Length: 107
Image (cartoon, rainbow, N blue to C red; front, side):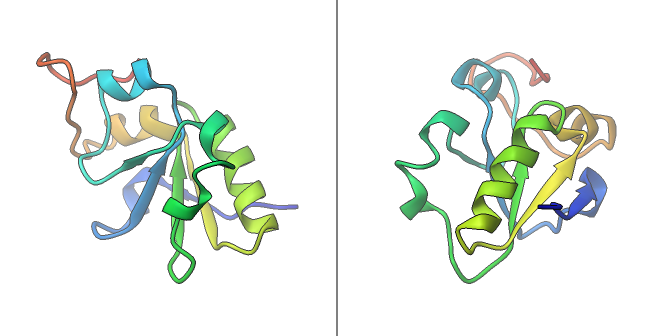
């Protein structure tokens, strides 16, 4: 199944952005509006993912998010992979925050 992919600069401001990275990666730096559900928890937490709007899925470089987006599409969601992941997000100058008290970065 082919997954639709967009560049980080194309993610709308008000989009549902699902970050599937691990907790340490999330804490280092993430998009302020992102919802964090690690890929390994996605099946058990699927109720937290909306049905009626596109889901932009992001990870560090785009691989895990592509897998997660494919699964979400398979179960009937409308998922879009953010190509290049948080690395592209940071390179595009999109806003980032951290949970560590330190400046955000892509771990």
